[in-house]
Figure (cartoon, rainbow, N blue to C red):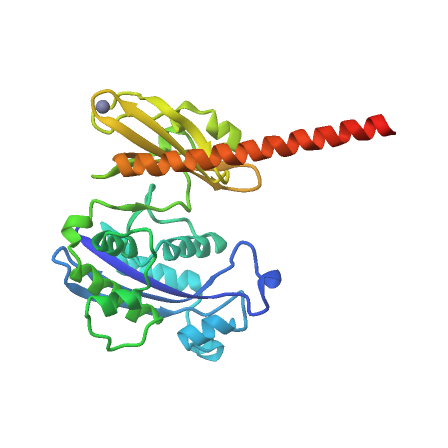
Amino acid sequence: MSTYIVMDLEWNQSPYGKEKSIEALPSEIIEIGAVKLNERMEQVSEFHQLVKPQVYRGMNRIAARVTRLSMEELQVLGQPFPKAFAEFVDWCGEDYRFCTWGPADMLELQRNIDYYRIPNPFGFPLYYYDVQKLYGLELGDDKEKLSLEHAIDRLGLRQDKPFHRALDDACYTGKVMRAIDFERWKTYVSVDYHRIPGNREEEIYLEFPTYSKYVSRVFPSRNAALSDRQVTGIACRQCGRRLRKKVQWFSLNQKQYFCLAVCPDHGYVRGKLRIKKVDDEAVYVVKTVKSADDSSVEKLMEKKMEHRRKRRQFLQKVKKAHKKEGSHKISS
Ligand SMILES: [Zn+2]
């Protein structure tokens, strides 16, 4: 990948609240902005196009305030999405990787593609750079989601344009890429979850210096996912051995599960499952596996204790309810 397409989108949402929002298209793209960087990270080209709205004919208050775009402007200067998108893909060329600030742009772009039934032109799996994440890694904290403005400020980069217009934000994101140690962080590629693996062959395995990631296919239910050996198995990151678990998978909220496994030669390994809903029943799972030092083992054990406490409280409640029911029966 020698070319980077740094992309930013602006979108509009239903001006009349969530009830009037169209489920298949909650966010209608109104502006596409992008800059192209060569392998030396130099900006070599720009793309900008306003999009003529077809779905929401009034501006959402927040979108209007943030972008300062008006419906009139979009109607007059915008291209219909299919045309704007075709021109954008043309401009992107071949053999490139997308870079965005956060994962939302990749998702919304593809939702708009799907809405207009345009065949998805991007390869699968779709890898991209989440520059917000890379910036977080450089700061030593990739949990906190920092704004692009914050990053530009903190890196001492010049702010000569307003934020929240697509091309300007794409330029700024490109500047952040140049300011951080991109060579160091570029192994931390992100994978898009809009299209999920359809079968076992398509499942995704990624190895990073500090953790590994697995994206499962879709399962008909959470239970089906949690009884799949590929999902629940933990392998040592160093020797590849299938590991025995010290602490079996447990969850505090049914969304995230944790486990602790141990390799006799390489020590503790922490597993984490994130259960992602596809619809009311179906799910897919993102598993990450990390070597665990003393402090992360301790943190996990604390979570496990909390889990035990909650379980005990739950069982006591059930017991009490049973008793009540029992006494009720006797008295009646
Ligand atoms: Zn090992």
